Amino acid sequence: MKKGRLITTKDNPASFQQTPPITLLRIIKKLIKKIFIRSIMETINFAISELLNYFSQKKQKNAFYCNLCKKESSYFLHTSNKKRILYDSICPNCNSRKRHRGLFEVYKNILKSWEKPKILHFAPEPVFYSLFKLYDYVTADISLTDVDLKLDIKDTNLGAKTFDLILCNHVLEHIDDDLKAINELERILKPLGRLILTVPGDWEREKIIKYKRPDGNGHYRDYGLELIKILNKKFDEVNTLDLYEYNKLYRLPLGLTVKHDLAILCHKI
Image (cartoon, rainbow, N blue to C red; front, side, top):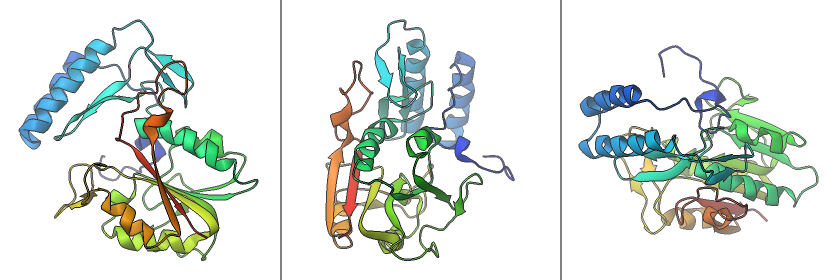
């Protein structure tokens, strides 16, 4: 992000913007930058994923479906970090990730539980806007300029028991004190309300890995199943849902991966 530039939801994943074509020149330029500022493993994974993306663009037969932009595609873009390559992640038509395509199905099902819910969405993704347009829907973020409320998730100054449904998708990992944020989310959730969380993590690992300083993605931690125990102490019921179960809901797969994206549904009685 350039210094002084205002950031909006268009800077977030799932911004409903087409991804630009991948060229060899673009790959080389990015690779040169990463060689000097990133780890060897991260650079190698980037090179592999981008080369795969480059050749994937040339495929003709549709292999995936995006339930957000309602388009079939011959490929979804791979992404990478120093740990791994995440295959078939980004829809090139709307910029949605795996988690967004899975959450869309979760949100649709949850909304059937209410007639007129009051909804709060932190760090909102534009691909979901059409789903919520008929509801009392409020967007919030501490930095984004095109949201309804500019809020600190750790201390919102909102009234207690205000919202029926709170959506918090890949936010907690960016918060220095996530326990304080969880307490605040529970405070502003109405009785019989639900909080739907997603965070990056390893769902076959127990412990949460905490970093001394934020990593290259601004993450303070990488979550494990320990998070479920923490949430169980604050909420009356906590359920988990592997978003992969929606992968074959349509004629073509949504590009979801087993045990990669876990939706955590927190209920307050």
